[in-house]
Amino acid sequence: MNLYVGNLPWSCTEEELEAHFAQCGPVKAVRIITEGRSGRSKGFGFVEMESSDGGQSAIDTLNGKDFGGRELRVDTATERS
Image (spheres, rainbow, N blue to C red):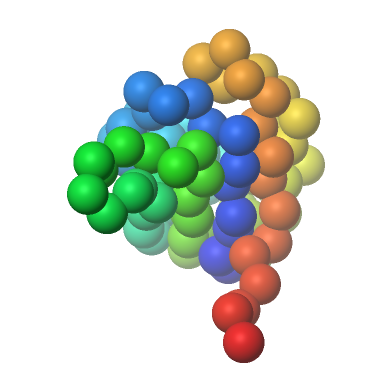
């Protein structure tokens, strides 16, 4: 299950994000979106959970909760058209 994660702290690393989501189940992949030239985080990313149960658990558990001083937004990712 692929999740959109918004309102990330600017200093957050992919390793920290993976560890945070691992409490809800096995994580398959993590990607924080960055600006091309500066490499600075855009404040959002994607977490792919190994199962839909883990993904739903992450939404239920982490959406709206504090992470690094910011309130995470966690939702099912939608495909770009």
